[in-house]
Length: 236
Image (tube, rainbow, N blue to C red; front, side, top):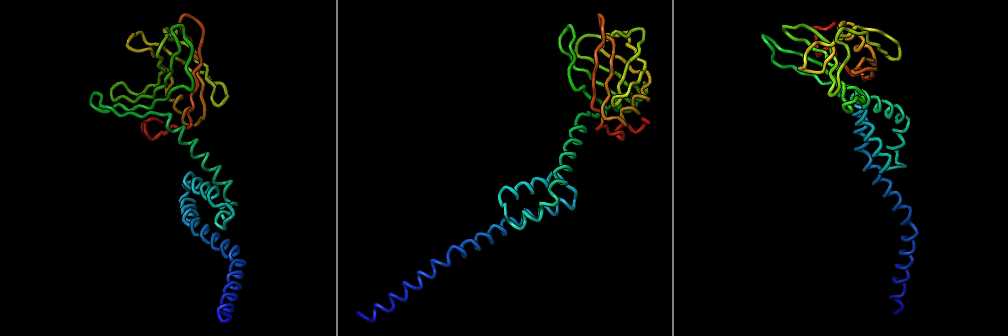
């Protein structure tokens, strides 16, 4: 019986020592697991950063900070996070502005008609109801280049010609307009389409005030900063 007591006592002592070491060992093992799990996200972050894919880099950084806080990987990206966040916001804003434009290339006559169109930021109130306002730059193989506004409801009061007041990034500008005598579309042409094109190529926001029937004026504002001039290559 005495021979059994010694091994049992020894096992008890060893077990006690093992229990005392478990918290540190478990913590170290968990930390190692966290670092290993965080490593792919850190690697993806570095690759996205090198490619200047800011939105992907931000998503990897956010996931890393959320799932593996306190890791060396999370600490390593901390100094770069603010810049990545700002760049990602800029990339989203730039993409939103680009997506406001609609480009078309359709057969017309002996060639193709190219156009670039954008909707105003907000609808305008007309007697017939709220109306969209669309600005279209058109390059037609037979009719040439033109720029015009189109309304869904109501009508422009510019049949004999009119002066349009513009604000180009807050600065005033004036251009001539005219409403063709046709019922095919509710459209008003901007006479100096080349000047308007140059304005839209360089400005971030353009407002156009125009007369409407039966009286008064309305203002359509366009977020112009996402225009891709290469879509209408003949426009200068």
